Length: 351
Image (cartoon, rainbow, N blue to C red):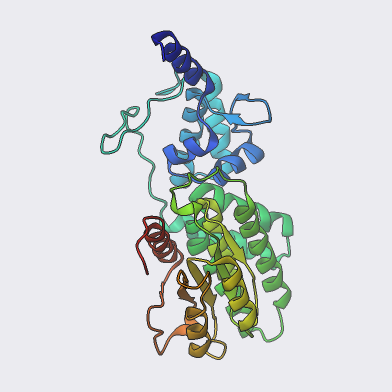
């Protein structure tokens, strides 16, 4: 290739700007967060390619960095968005250089990229999450569905899906559940409303479009299988795992609540998943023989058969261990364990 062709390619790269996926990786947030900020607050890129593909310039990046800095320090998202837009319009502040459309220099492994003068994002204080939980609980008690949905969207956009699930959604669901237990038959409608909107939020994250994974990456593996055990109707934690996997680009087959054991086994034989997640909320629904049956389910042709790694999720599995099964204690740990298994699969190491 001639030197002129190389220069032409470099010039083209400079004009394209960052994709949403590249910007998400650069900022350490999910693509869903960037799309939410664009849709709700107008913090989107100034330029879009044919087919509505987002391309983020350096000025756009500075704007969303300011949004992230403010929300992480506890500023309400709407107020933070107004401040970020005002900063962009005024052109003030570090890093708001003229918009050339140039793509930032790539990050090389082991070599930290030069960033703007430090404006570190503060770790959210416990009070930040307490305020969010109180606001969400009060909106649910009022049966104010639009407010509930707005507060859930804000939590995900401000703190990431995993943090919003662990620090906002789960504690609020538990608080509402305790209120229902203490009040007899009252507030059942509150718990149902909140659960539905949490589920809706998780589904949005799980189905948000993600960049196509490279063939060699863990996300390019065959689909995982996620299912609640027979008799188990509490599927929200499994939906949270599905949403987090969806954000990371892991293909999956989500079967939801109360799946017959032979239906799970049939799905395993048909898809050959590296991991099967079985969720049990209660000890009464968890079944060690069921888990062993799924762990022994094989697929493939004779002489080249495979079988899945079984992940046992939920408090129902407390008690006798299942040999070889994974037992994560949190959503984050489940993602780490799944990534490790899929990484081993893609490098050709046996289980």
